[in-house]
Length: 322
Image 1 (tube, rainbow, N blue to C red):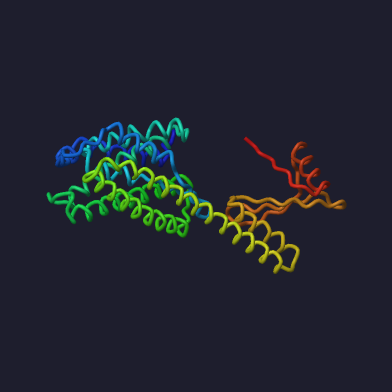
Image 2 (cartoon, helix red, strand yellow):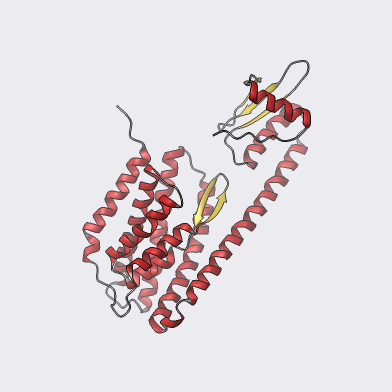
């Protein structure tokens, strides 16, 4: 009997919970104030743009993304009914996942289910914290931040669970850094979204300026991500050079080079082939478990030829396998 992947089970569970919210609790929530109507297709387009415009942050060997998703989410909480918010989230996000991100299968199912659950939970938490008070009151501010932070926490927990089920291990340090960075971005984005709500409620003619501010914020995120990556690369390179130069014994030097190279390139496996006229090529392999294996290099012809050419010309050779 074929074993069902754990990530598929998680995706189906998330999808069922989201469907349960749509069929039950969300239908009983109060409708938004009708003084401002936000067209449903416009909200879907904003959600789609937030999925397409991602800023990727590298935390060790894991990649986490920051988006401006909080902007359409908050607008939806104020100006769209709860079920319409979920449907707009799905209608705007799924085409981008399929056409832009090229997602298929279980990954697409998981992200679509997660997006629906996020929107549903945001609507529930917002209504619960608001407790019948006016959204424009101070209670509305606390309800908005509470709904967004609850949504981000839920997303972080489920994404972490999916990574753990898929890869079998989780870098807690990297996960903590990603969670802290995401929380700061969520608070910033939510603050901008609340300003947009106030602008729409008082002077709609200048509401388009919020798109300019959002674009500047997105560019600021990209610039910060680029500078952070450059800083970490320099730090890793400095650490690599310092550790290797401080190692004295030849055997320890090889092990250190492999260890630091694996960390520098964020790889799970590193190999070092040493050519000798007397003994032939010798290969040292450092796997994900950290165990160093040494033995003769018995590569097939094309690979051996590339290695020989790199050694003879003292030049790097990039070998890409598909």
